[in-house]
Length: 526
Image 1 (cartoon, rainbow, N blue to C red):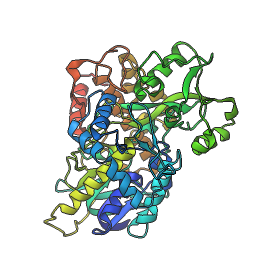
Image 2: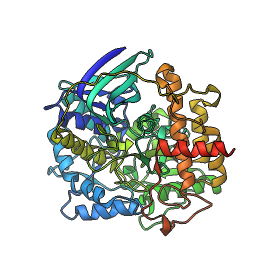
Image 3: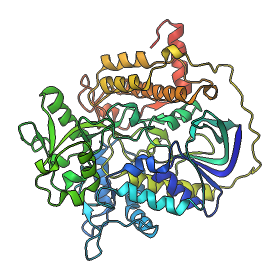
């Protein structure tokens, strides 16, 4: 068993993980581990930009209000304020670090408009290649200052004396490595990959959330999964058609060429994503229509959107016809590991930032282009917290793997294949949900116990176990919220209920397993 040590261990190579590494690298010995390479992160694939109140007519207060409205006021207002106030600073910092954002001839930023924003405040790089440009610049900066280890799948946190002291990882050959650190930052992304129709990179299975959950760390808001309205229809894996296309004048139309968003919301095609996705779902599944993004009015489309152009051309779509077939799909997860505004979790020595964290900034539905901003802002806050904290005991912990008496082997007969889990989530926990279907899904997904000796299992089994764990947690969280709010829509509870205002569904291993034990004793098993 290999062993590596660092002051700070960062799990994940997206914008949150790499920016935290950059901030820490001058003062700490840092290791960044990734499942694949950093170029395969969701951040790298991000076509949208970074929202920032840069224009003289704009203000952080307006950005704040747009974020709260999109999040259906389920947001943590202090965290949102912290987020939006940092927008201009993030853009300035990334510019200094080598990101060439798109500008007009006079040097001012080209500011785009996306769903839910009442002003043009989105900065892009390379048109629709912002994520790629940002990650490439960050990799150039950190690769000589930190150790980057790829193809390592984080399996379990190492806990000693109620403190996280590192992580057990496995590689593609099922070899285990112990990564030991005084502080560990989880930046491993979200869980939208548990759906079959998704814009996410392969591997977005919620593994870091599951790892935290098994360690007793609290999770929250797992029912809030954002479905992006415009994924390229009929493509597997689904490609994303950036919201910036609608910001430039793209219009959603049905098979007859009729626009259908104009009477739905004052912002029409640029309404928040939950509203647009539900309307597309209705058009496709209720009215039996196909849906297209009409781009015929956008001048110089191919130069403005090179990434979308390549995606469509590879799928055999003739852009000269001006129509791109689209449908909604799982895109972003608002739920995650509960943290404070510095990324601290309920476990000492453990931080969470980026999409895997639940800071409360997104509420029930993320405002477009707030995700890269979130990763950058809270990466800085976590780094500041680590650098300012005093470590009273700097002696390395002695790692001894102990198997808890109640840890069990996985019951293979209950473990589903990845494709089965994705089909279940698409069918029962998608854009429109109901109690009957959610109960059905919960019964199929139930493993009975989520504390198990994973290290002795092959990597393929570990991945399925994590996918099924986070799928069960998502489905049962959907069941608990008996209302519709933001991205979470129940057709048996179709309205937003004021009694649910500010209420969060907190998931804890200890609570969940005690409930299961009680039900089992009573002969009532999920």
